[in-house]
Length: 189
Image (cartoon, rainbow, N blue to C red):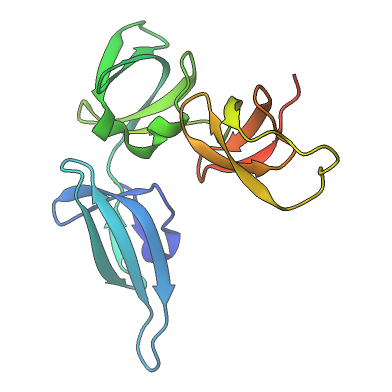
């Protein structure tokens, strides 16, 4: 079984501690005078969805759970259930919205994703780093304002709101970083 030290933490990583699998939501390294560094992490329990803050000493090690990754295609949503199809076996799998988490904001129908499973249970969905979305609602663009760092909110086809430059209009295709929801660039048609 693989292990990781606190220095190897990153957002979205899964670790085992206190007999459960936890996902790192955010973390911060802190140095206190005349003491060893501390890592404060907000962790989400994969089974219960509970979020908790924990403190660890720098250098503490944790087991990384044995997670199987399968390529699947997101098919559709029906209320709180999301349906995926295994790209190899063509079997369909329903998953609850709370099991998928925040990635729901950037799930697009027919999109290929990596589904993470542990002992037959869904524990996460990995999206491609950058995905192209159509802007469905935003204020009208300002002509000539193509270099400004000023932004405005824009709703994309999945319903998520992204901060975009002023020149973006309804119907434009934009590339979004799915890890943090940041606008990357206008996509070429």
